[in-house]
Image 1 (cartoon, rainbow, N blue to C red):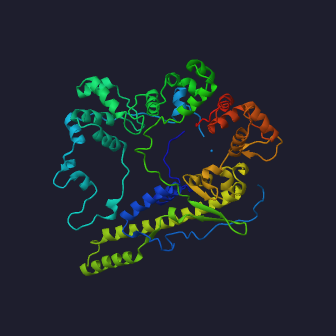
Image 2 (image 1 turned 90 degrees about the vertical axis):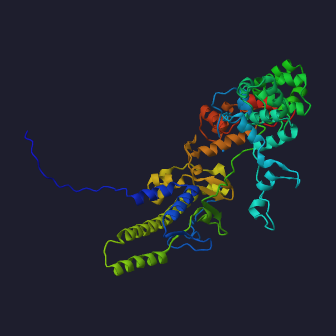
Length: 530
């Protein structure tokens, strides 16, 4: 075999992922919050882009949401997670996800003292008011009145709430200093998880003084603040209600039995009858294991639907985009013409060819980028509308009669119906939601696995089977609680073929206790708030 060099010419086709195509794909799978942030950044970077006013109509840069997708031939035929963290049963009973944390304890005594007693909060005896308070609310100087934004109330944090009570509870500087340090150690649930001996070592003081200050803090609102464990938190709340008797103390010492609802063992341990143990359990379950959960929470973002689905008077469906989730941008052609003319005029006056070359290149790139962004936004809107219309057509039974009529549906089915790629449908349905008369539902909700029917007829959606299991359990007789095997038999009578482990998995995803736990719950005389 001889080794020689030669030239060969081959012809082939490849798909080139241009930066514009990559951008269009990214825009397709963005939520409307992410899309709004991206568009805001582009408007700030590109001088030819600008936000459209709310009364502007959709043009080339926007999608007219009045264009709706409809279809006819509608039919007239009529949500998860078991604990898996491995924590003790009592923790699972009281807490959904309690992850206590530790704060930063590196500040010195001097910094802590300045934090508790800032000079700005000094009381002005000449005016009878606090300078810090007047400065905080933006007190007017002279005849000037504060702006409306300065008069709005602000939700205080947990730390501020406790420090205010500390200032009223004691005037001793040392107690205030220790109290402020303890307040910084309290986590978002209201627990003090740092050992008092460790705090005493850090502050170079006696542990008895730390204990005394903690007792003061535990008398603050909300009741249960500063507890070192769940038992102490519940005890503080019961003491405040004057219900912490020996029997209740004995009950709290065995919260593991309470979590298992082992009333027989609790009666024997506390030496009470059925009626007393039922009342005690009902009272314990009315306590708050997270006394500070209402403080320091992040603001809740409203879930805005991307697509509205409404039924018209003639029975057809009207599907339209939500204008609040569609960023509106326009290309300022007048500004582009002005800048382009200025560059051409400068070039003609100076008689040079390359002085304004960089400006013209930048301007051309901005125009191309702006036009591509507007076309990408329009294509994104039309694609979402097309996919949404097909989902509504496939799941019309749900929109008419609810989750029991939800049909099995896959991304491939929708992709084939609208002649798109399956990955495109997946991107469109990510982080998007429907606004319907039945509420707001994510698009992914309508894609459900199929559960085969016992008689070989049309399969049912897994979500519909899960909902049916919930209905059967809610309708069960308290004297004949349905086990997982009994649920399997009932479903088979309805021609739904599922295994016992599948029923158990669906029941746990609905956060429904086992039949043994439900039987214990329903035997309780007094109502129990779970």
